[in-house]
Image (cartoon, rainbow, N blue to C red; front, side, top):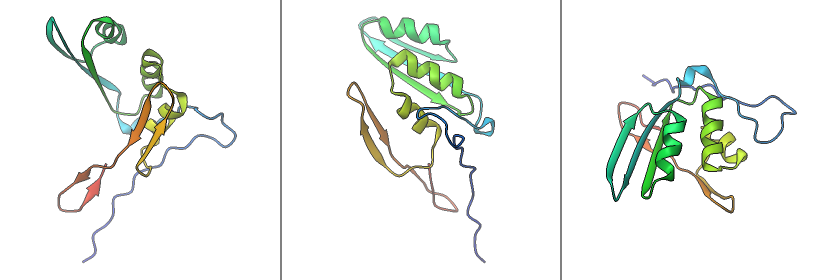
Length: 126
């Protein structure tokens, strides 16, 4: 018996939209933040911080890791991009998850797309 391949909806910008236009699909989930900051003062880990809190942690000495889950909120992705000075084309690519592996050099930062294999009953990638 053949197994059905799971199909996900591809979110696209409207024809004629400016490059870097952010469009998301609500079914991809509400955007949630998880931040980890570690430095000379120790480790801070917070689930669901505000962007203002992320900005405060970013200004401290040390290293910051920000995980954004749920791509159903284009506005949140845009605000995170503004906070970190990310190129709008990179942000557009973040919301268009069905891409081949690639690396883009935006001068001040790189954007990587990689596929992760999810083993299971049906081999899948994300």
